Length: 201
Image 1 (cartoon, rainbow, N blue to C red):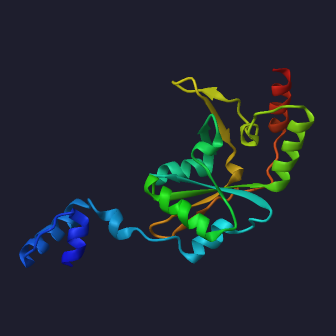
Image 2 (image 1 turned 135 degrees about the vertical axis):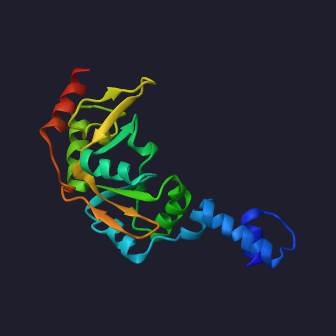
């Protein structure tokens, strides 16, 4: 117990029993070190959910602090600024890679959003961009049904449709919330219109 308290506080001293009990009571009251106690690796069920259908889809993960934000992403879509890859990490079939990414990002929030877009959709629209000679555009930037807008910093803001959101996981409890509208093959006429708009520019 004393070694745990030392690692939590960084204080090197001999702790008396009553001091230890008082310190632990303060932790219980404040929840200051709650993440230290509840933190745990991705369990097998969550891992399977994230990696399911990886051979046919491009999978990404994103972390958010509040469940309300996670629910909003499920119902409204994933909003991102300039580039999708600022906050969405690609997932590969390497479980160790996923664990390492999780360990570096889990402090951004307890809720892990899973985004999944089929290879068919990616390949189809990548081919259209190539055919039209459109360069330096991320495919996710055209997979939007509403026109991009500018935020207060004049950055471009995009909204990936909710159909590409597979669900989210509370990585502290292991609870999985699935998106009933999830469809990695979702195709919208707006995607082609976005390419046509880029051609005109």
